[in-house]
Length: 159
Image 1 (tube, helix red, strand yellow):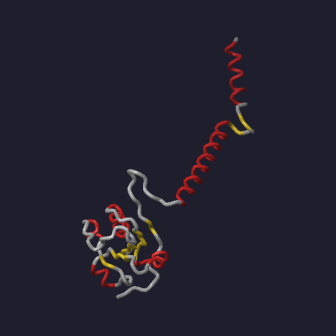
Image 2 (cartoon, one colour):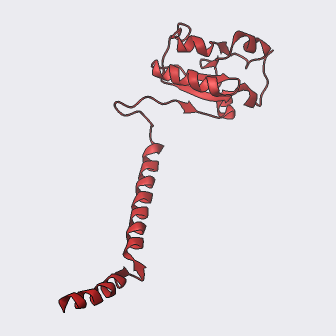
Image 3 (spheres, helix red, strand yellow):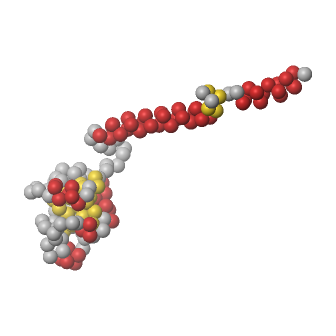
């Protein structure tokens, strides 16, 4: 007899398990979404501060636009072209220093003695500049900015 009563009451109880006409699953999902959104806002607020690597985290480099790079091209900052000598001779940004990505990857960094100096890196399309920038950061350089490729450079070049 008790089995029949339980079998009859069980569907009634399960069907009535709603809050504000929402099933419990939806309510829990809404709570999870809300907490994730709140955590995301907190993380965004933290990112507004200095984005320094935590202990055991690899240092990061900063990707900027050509326009931002142009504004940063002042005396004392290094503009680093990481293409080949031949590509450099075909046209480069005024004041750029040539240091091919292969040299950087091999650790030939004698031309860059100050690891805290601002270094603006570019190549032809953005691939080698990303590789070179990561290598520089991993070598201890602290102010490295990748502004992609010269094909995206909207300003004059020296030939």
